[in-house]
Length: 280
Ligand SMILES: NC(=O)c1ccc[n+]([C@@H]2O[C@H](COP(=O)([O-])OP(=O)(O)OC[C@H]3O[C@@H](n4cnc5c(N)ncnc54)[C@H](O)[C@@H]3O)[C@@H](O)[C@H]2O)c1
Image 1 (tube, rainbow, N blue to C red):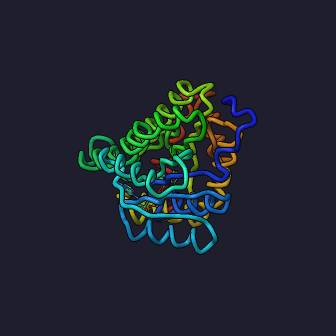
Image 2 (tube, helix red, strand yellow):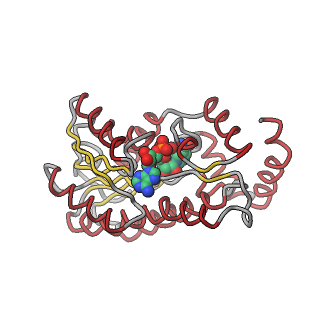
């Protein structure tokens, strides 16, 4: 808990910025924040998609605006913050660092260096830029919240997902550090760590070969809806929870990794080598 006391819940009537709001989890965040009475600046590298999300929020009675922002570029994140100052009815008090891409299917040593740079630029530098720009504002205001969209990949260390795993572990470490630095400040911080969520991440990313086909099948079968994940995340932020793992398998992986790390690593390796081909 972060001493939220009697302050208003960070997710309700928020003045929010959501990155990667044009699709999937980001779009669901924008819609839910609007439903909770908030005003939201929807940003995305694809402006038309952000505009579509903003229009959906408005259709449902919320207040929303759209802007272009590539989160891998600090100048663009700063410009997004200026845009938020212009359009939102009050200073930003809720930041959702969500924009992200998937890379997978190739082992470390074979995955292209360009794929490392691309993933780190968006998934990790995006969260760093969002924190760098907005944390001073929130700290000064002494209230509000930040949700960093990490993933179970931040601790599951699944094979063939090296770049993605590294970015999400980094996002987790950043969030944990922020939680310590912002303790007692009135600003809540939450890391969202889902497993599979039904979104466009595979179509939009660089997950290749068998991994891409397997990902689609598993997502269709076991993926949770983005709406449910987002609802859990905003409620967790309101409670002052540092981590939110909406799915049972995420919580099991979290425990196994800590209780039997060596067995866990061997198990995931063997499942990958012998089991994935059967699931495919
Ligand atoms: N879908 C899952 O199973 C899953 C699981 C765990 C975590 N996540 C995380 O959820 C977040 C959202 O992904 P999603 O599943 O909704 O995928 P998605 O592809 O449906 O949405 C991602 C959005 O981010 C935008 N985007 C991509 N690059 C960007 C950039 N440089 N700057 C700004 N916006 C950019 C895309 O245009 C898209 O609108 C990501 O951080 C992802 O890693 C997803």
